[in-house]
Length: 637
Image (cartoon, rainbow, N blue to C red; front, side, top):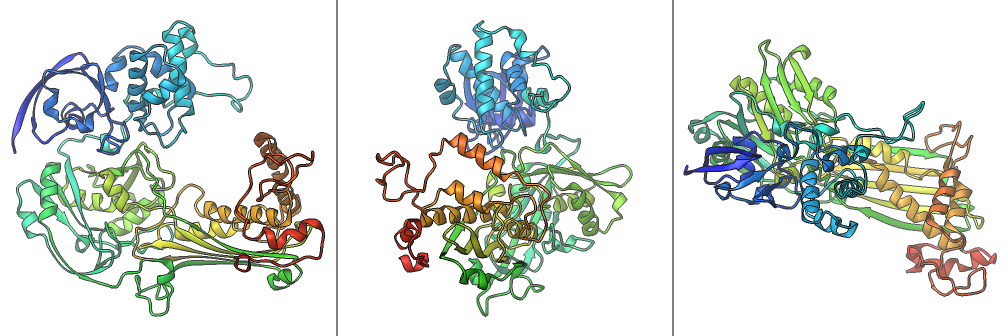
């Protein structure tokens, strides 16, 4: 390994280090100088979490070779305030609540500082432009931009600096007031340490060998070359698991590494713990695995087709979970309907894209307690599963939730903590695993792709008489959170509307795709997209104002929900009123022709709603009070 000597100035201090020539400036700062406020979110210069100043210029340190630091003057997030008070930019971020998970915030603060250094009078458009190279997944950016404007005005003298340290009086309650986060100072200064920032004495680095196949039998694994490499401390596979190998949120169907066969591209097959990252990567490349490809299930429809390959023996029909709900008599409800609408709605797989890639550290302490630090969103459950996997009593397993750099449900699943713990036991040394962004994309759970087949019957008055709702979801290779997602989808399937006759079926099935798991509103988003779209289609077909249609069917006090619960209170009427007012909606039926008369006799200038354009012609008589017709989107086509 070739090396180079670098002498430079970092945060006002002269430093000299000998580093490998393949290293980046980001590696020099984080690994050699322990300046972990500079984060790695993507490694490709896209997210901005690694932003630093080099000779006064803002750069993405993940794109700069370490050798370029020779003779340079470098400033990181830790150097902005040093040991003194926070800068106006940092104080403004604290004041506005601009930091949430905090992982992007050091880079955001650096970008904001750069903006105001270049132009202390930058207007909001210039601020947006100069901050455009930095990504945040939590805040929506509003508070970040507000913080930069406040800092600008303080720096320019138009606003007293004391405003940055004072807040409006709280009175008797915190509710309705902007209350500062107690963890914000650690985030805006880069002091907060996430799992990837942890540095323990004698710590090893882990790398993982992942499957290139979506479905294949593992014929053999040869780790002999990797194990013989200098600097390699251990190589582990599923054969090394001492206890009951299986984890998951509802069904424990996933081994910590592939056992017998792989079920999706990117599944862990083996792992290496070595003295450094480069050695671990070389060892992983030296592991030889022989695969026998198996038939692949690529879609949920394929999974439930007769004769489909079986992904898990316990589920010969490939169904992870089926949630049925029944209420009333849908057949009778459709018979009394004046209008019947049928349509289908599809949603895609979605990546969580949290700024912090998965990371963790495991070690065995002096009392033989296996300890794992990771940004887990479900540490108690993970602890119990890990104890079973390791064959240890629960008091010998400890899980610590490190700072979570964005989760959104995506870090509920224990996809790597077991490997870390097993390697720590084998080596009796701390072991760290940091995912690359590519690994995070390929191995972590996604939002469930779903297809909903929907049928709705309505009276001329707008009252819903019956609904059938059938959702088929791609659960991917393992169960993870699928059961909970299907339960939530079923409960929320028909929206906040009282329907006396309904039939709901939500199913998640196994495929050979990346596993699906929890994601904000898990199951609710897919269901509500379908239901609210159907409500808009129905409003068009009936010639009815869409707000009015919702008011006719909304839950009220005393309503019976889809799951047969009586509501003691309901507030949807207030929500609809507020939404109608805020949107400045002009009451009236949606118009797909674009030139109908308004109530004032002039042209209707509202934007046409096109969701139901295929059935409006068949349903037009309904809005005129003529003899009712029954229409479906299939017939309309």
